[in-house]
Length: 140
Image 1: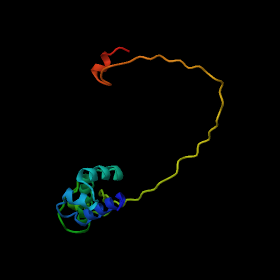
Image 2 (image 1 turned 30 degrees about the horizontal axis):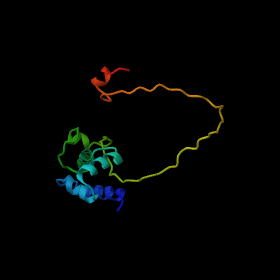
Image 3 (image 1 turned 180 degrees about the vertical axis):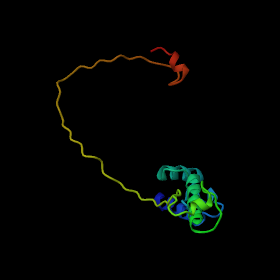
Image 4 (image 1 turned 60 degrees about the vertical axis):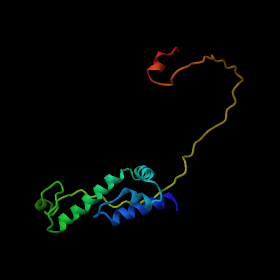
């Protein structure tokens, strides 16, 4: 199974269990990876952390119920205000992964011949740390 399919399986699991307590370990199992790697890959691919995605999707569901039923849910506005026609509520749609690979851009180039040159350099050995205060104190 490839990693795209695994992440999509995890998203499907999240969507099917949005109204329940979601255990990140179980979600990661759906993608056949560790919790740590799943959360990193999800964030990279989807542009949002797993927890934030779950919260936003739950808010979207709550907003939809608020606008269409008599249920009492807080969504940044009063329930009666949310039920008014034309009231705009925030909604995050379900994620679906689609990967598109594109070829690189065409580059025009040329090969030039240059006359022979003699290059010289200066060799010096440095010791110490590659960065930080110790580096600043080194000779240049």
